[in-house]
Length: 291
Image (cartoon, rainbow, N blue to C red; front, top):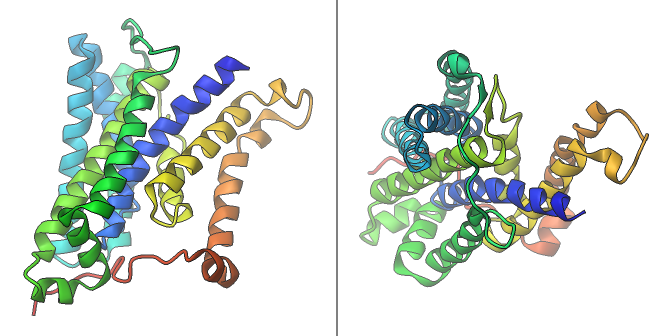
């Protein structure tokens, strides 16, 4: 039972990293549906860098770097050019899906490095994820920078008149979001499942994206949702631990995605929004052109 819980928390930390980055993105008004593609790039290039150098730190830095670059690319399309943000994000996902398959194919197999140490049996990245949750909440809720991020996500024209650079804040946010997604992919490939294979993330980016909506743009609720989906993911991998002989393991692997759909349907209902106040940033997904 304890190994099951630990693996669930380790899955939760990856959802948390990617989800927090996207949460900041969306609070600034930028929607990035290409999380899966950025995570694939972070995982693949981080894996290759760590395997060829024998250095974990380089692998994680590569994941952060490629995530920042792809976040900047999405920002260029969606902020500077005003391209539809969903189209830009989907393009990054499709590009990541194909390119990482080509780049990573020669490195198929295990990482081959000694596993990173744990703290009290739990990955140090889990504690980092908890710290990041508190930090993101504090910045968004208690600082001037957080007020600027929230302002450009709600009323960018008013923020611009108030002296806030909408372009600068949105670029900062989208680069941060890309870095977090790239890092989440690197943690997956270098710690959680250090064996590279074709499309090995299997939808983790899309679950992280759904968690942002599930959280009502609140970092603490996002973390709770990440733990829930971490448990569901591990249950899907080890259903015999609790439900021996009940349904095929392939059916169980659909459970996290079915739950994702059900959660999105629930929080989209008028009843849920009126009762719990799940309101998205007003300018989310809308390009802003300075007048």
